[in-house]
Structure formats: structure tokens, C-alpha cells
Length: 389
Image 1 (cartoon, rainbow, N blue to C red):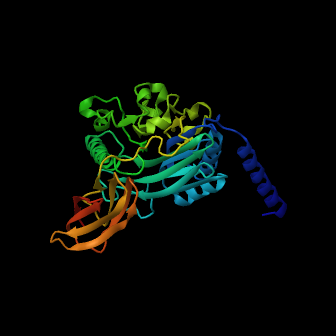
Image 2: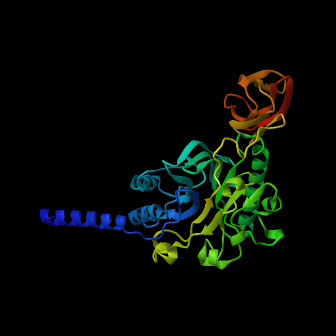
Image 3: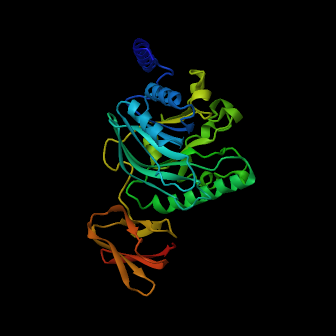
């Protein structure tokens, strides 16, 4: 190639990229005073290769959100390329060794506002219910108006409308409900958000409604997307005028959501005409949290009871043991086998009253029935653990 021609093409490409970067495709949605997050199924990312990567980077910068929960990541190198184009952002995705499929979940977040304290895949061995294993993260959002600490689950349930696919979603929701029921009361923070592509509608009749276990437990769980359900204008999957991407919050998280909290579907295709071709057949769904606490434990009082639980149980390799202390005390949790032999000490230290969670690593132990015994302040509590390998 002629040297001058090569230089001309290179400079032209650079100028085009710079021009696109300076051009807003959509209007901003986030503010500096609120915590603004969205769940976004970016279909088979990157659907059109580099064009999708570059355009999505522009959209994310335009929107000015704090955190994005993403589904359908098919190319991790492309995801890393996306992150590199987002100044002041970072991201992570579910592990590469997912044996059940290539579609990954992940998050993108502003590093000046969001801290990821820890994260892990969950339901890793439940391929039938969760063909794309969810991730659970511990998040702290630090904004000028306050701090919001919460647990986040990002998931992508089985698609399609056939009877088996609907049954798989129903079983996944039942498993998720059991998981949250066992963990939420015992972990240090009771603020939880569960977001993602649930692939179903909240307005289905009770007999066909996979969400029913959560919908009938309105004391503990709330779909922030429920007010949008049934209105085609707010469809997150416009091909069928369906709202199938949802944000669910525990009751404690409603404190941070506040009276002025807002959840909407972002109709980006109204502003960027090539959205469905270049980005996705799903629209993102955004939630705004307006009442961020400025003090510690404003929505998380100390426990008034004593006890422990674990999840998953039965489990393979490891499980989380959550426990509550109503008094400060020397605290010990031991693991015993069915013959009463102590196999492992999970924790042995002085702790103040509060909610705690520790991991029991059973990789070196054979399958079988075990017992976790919590001893603190002259009291004890025992639960069964079923290890299946």
C-alpha cells in the first residue's frame, strides 16, 4: 500500500473515532446526587464486533449511570476492550470455566463511585435451573449525598416460551427464593438487589406466573419494575412488547430507593435509530435510588436473635455459613462428622453483636452428613450440612 494512502486512512479512522466519541447518541439519565443503575441484556455481545463495542462505550458514557449489570457477554476480550474505552470505569464477568454455555453475566461500574468488596458465582452446579450461573457481589456505592451498601445478584434465566423453559424458570425462582430467605436475615446487610433478564412477565396469571413466590411475599421482596408491567410503552423486549428484564429489591433496600425512587425502561432506540441492529433487541431497565443513608446501619439494626444457617445446602465443595450474635462474645463454629468427630474449626474469635458470614471449605472432606455447631455467650446452635460430591 502507498505510504501516503496508509497514513491518510489511519488519520481518517482516528478522526472518525474521535468524532464519534465526542458525539452524544442519547441523553444522560444519571445524576451525581443519586445512585443510578441499570440491567442490560446486550445481545450476544459484541453483536457486530468492534462497531458494537465502540458504540456501546459511547452510550454508556452518555447515560452517566453508576453501575450496569450486563448479560449475554460472549467475548471476554471484547468486554475488556469495552472497559478500556470507558475512562474511570472497571468491570468483571462470570468465570471463564462455565461448563454450561458461553453467555456470561457481568457488571460495569464507575470506580469513583462504586467499590466491589467481593464477588462469587452462585448456583454453579444447578445447570438445569440456571444455564447461565448468576454472580453475587457485595457493593458499596459512595456518592456525595451518602453511602449505599448492598448485595447484588446478576442473573439470566432460561429463554423461550415452551413449557419446559417456563418450568426451568419456575424452579430457578423457587431456588432463588429459598436462597434469599435463608441468607438475608443473617448476613451483615439486608439490602439486596436481584437484577437481570428473567425472561418472563410479572403480569402472567397466578397458575403460569414464575414470579409468584416473590409476588405473594410482598413483606420481604418488591419488584421495582412491577408498576411498568403490562404497559407496552415500557417493554424491555420490544419485539413482543414484553417487560422481561427486572429489578427486585428486598424491603430494607426500599429505604435507599426512597419516596422519589424511580424505575423506567430506557427507550434508547427512540434516540439512536440503529440501536436494535448494533446493540441489542433488549432495552436497559434503570432504577434510581434517591435516599442514601449518611450514617452507619441506618437501615440495618443489630440482631435480636442468635442462630445460624447455611446456603447452598446440600452443597458441593463449599458453602456459606451465616450467623447472628445478639451479644458480643468469644465465638466458635466447628464442623463435626456424623460420628461426632470434629473435622474443622471455621471460626474462633471474639466478635461484637452483629450479622456475619463465613465460608466452609469442604474440598478435602468426603461426601456425607456433617454438623455445624455455633457456640457463643454460653449458647449453642447446630445445623445439618449435606456434602454431595
